[in-house]
Amino acid sequence: MERLRAAATTEPGRLRIIGAVLAALVLLFGLVTVWEISARVGAADDVVGRSQPLSADAASIYRSLADADTASSSGFLAGGDEPREVRERYEKDISNASKLLVNAAANTGADEDSRKQIALLSEQLPRYTGLIEQARATNKQGLPLGGAYLRYANERMSTQLLPAAQRLYEAETDRLYTDYDDARALPLASLGTGLLALAALAWAQRRNYRRTNRVFNHGLVAATAASLVVLLWLAVGHTVARSGLEEARADGQESLKVLNDARIASLQARASENLTLIARGAVLAADNKSDKYDVDFTAEMKELDAGLATARKLADDSSGRDPVVRAADGVKEWKQRHAAARETDLRGDYQAALPQVIGDKDHKDSSGASFDTVDASLEQAVAHEQKEFTRAARGGLGALGGLVTGSAALAVVGAAAALLGIGRRLSEYR
Image (cartoon, rainbow, N blue to C red; front, side):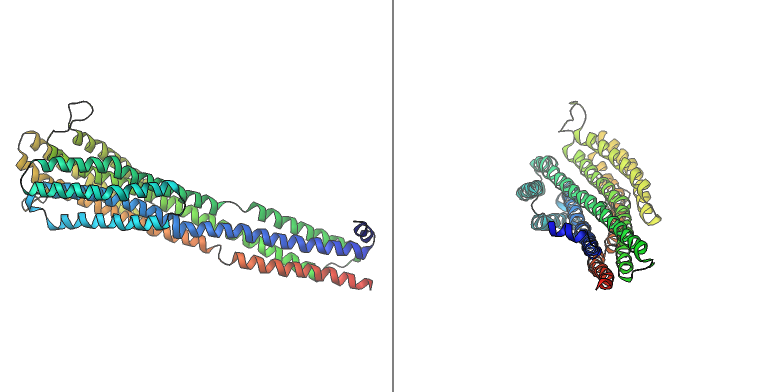
């Protein structure tokens, strides 16, 4: 400490201290920038490559399960003449859900809640498919017990499988938003350290000018330029990245969430519509008067209407808006055809109501055909928004490319230049 005080009393000693402090500040600026931007790049990379795909997979698990339930009830209504395409759709949904569960289990990391839901789904899915097979086999024999098996399977789907899939989707989406926030957080420490380094370099150059009347010290000018480049690169790069990630969230992920919810509501409504015919009033709603499945259908169609209205507002181009408009038109048609089928069923003419719901050679204008239009339109809208999300998120990630390596290299160059500049002044005392 005494030697430091003694050195500070002479100009060469003060210059050595100034040079060491300047070099340390520039290196600190580079180190803090590397640390903060590495964290931002990691979070942005997780958004693009891990958390958003896992959130999308969780939504696909929910959709596959809901669609499998819809397909099973549609096949049941067809009786022994279950259409081959309906059977294949059911099997494809179950296979897709099983594969996605395996993928989620392998990639969900240490999230305890996600692992719990995956375990529950993996346990309950075989039990559900077993009930469906019992319902199908009994139905082919013409026994009324098949309807009871199907209703029990639907109850298991509604009370255990779908809620677990919803919780998994929410957990993965929460993780996605956490990664969003981490990637978009301002690098305040880097910006602050950079401004401090520039201020110190400016002070050192002013001090040099006042003592020597030399306007420029090449070493200090080079150190200032290197630090300024890093600071500007940091500010501009992070601003562009933040903008890209915000666009991905606002124009992609938020729309995806609304569209996924709308598609799920449509699938649940279709299953309820089918079960209304299958149960034929055997299951009552909470008021002990109304048909439970018909009440569920009405509530789910309201959710679908609300979701489509929101999705239309969120759509920022015609490619995203047009499928939503087609889906909304399909919902209007679906409601009209459902009302006609329901009226026919309430008159006691089940055989006439059945083709109005599931369709046949003479009834192509069934409510099932309207549902297919809605589902296909929503699938197209989801695909478009997923593409928009990926484009914007990758653009945001790309804006940070090279910043970590570049800031480290420029910090080393800046620190070396500062030392050389001070060294040039020291040489004048020899």
